[in-house]
Image 1: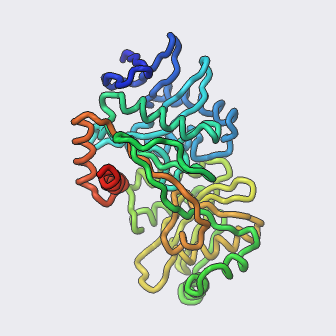
Image 2: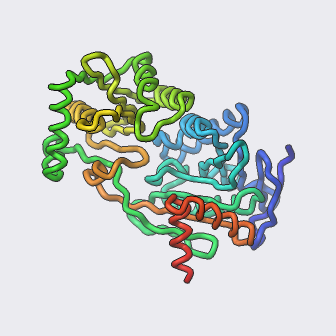
Image 3: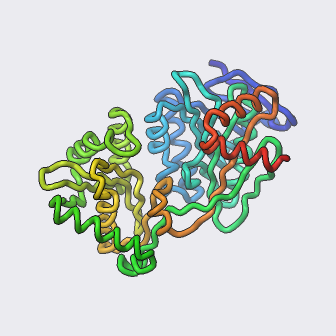
Length: 377
């Protein structure tokens, strides 16, 4: 398939046909590139570029922007990975990582960037990430088969430097995903509500006494697979077996990976928790729980064992990747992230975006579309 060229200097770039790779040139030199990652060679080429860029801009320890994690998680959900590279003098300065979801093999034209807490979307120097995201959205919306870009972006310490227009709307949102364990487990618990402390201890004591549950702090690969097979379809958010096993494998290959489990006295899996460790921070990426017991929260039981284990090991903070349940979010430190909706302003773009927002009014896109309408009134 032939690459297409368009010029960012034009005020309204004409739409171009879908392509595997779209190159933008300025003064005869490539300055931006959209890559729809569809084969092994492209994955390998992108891996080399991203690894070098992450090292250069100080994000080599950011697991959520690692090429292997990005491509494995995206492909697991039957989506197409999309990477926007921006160059200066032939050198890659930034990369924006997105994915386009498909419906029965057909692209929806909706691209998403970043998880619900604003992580994993942009690789660039910290002061330039908002600008890199803005430029990427502008370029993507000039593509014929892209009509909407939804991004969640975290920029600590300052307001988002992206202007609000008819095409782009953003709004701040408080999110909580990080537990502070710097003083140990007991000081952390004393900062929480009485109800939180009671449940934290009560459910664990009940599970130990009545069910004889056992905590396994280090699962073998075979145990990890067994736990996922047993629990992936029984939680509040069941997923197909193939996706669950792909997720488990991707996690197990992550540097610093760990997996923990909870068994009852008969050897039945009750809970599974996995993520990775980096220095004095632990990231919890996935948790599966048995939910057929109305009187016991195995999620709380597992997290009680987990936090005790990590506090003893000297862990200073715990990060719940992508956020956590409201009862646990209240125990986390408040931070600010930004939800961004960017759409094409032509009639087709506006119409498709409005239709998708109407179909899911309580989804991220629906809520942002409603808020943008109120702001433009």
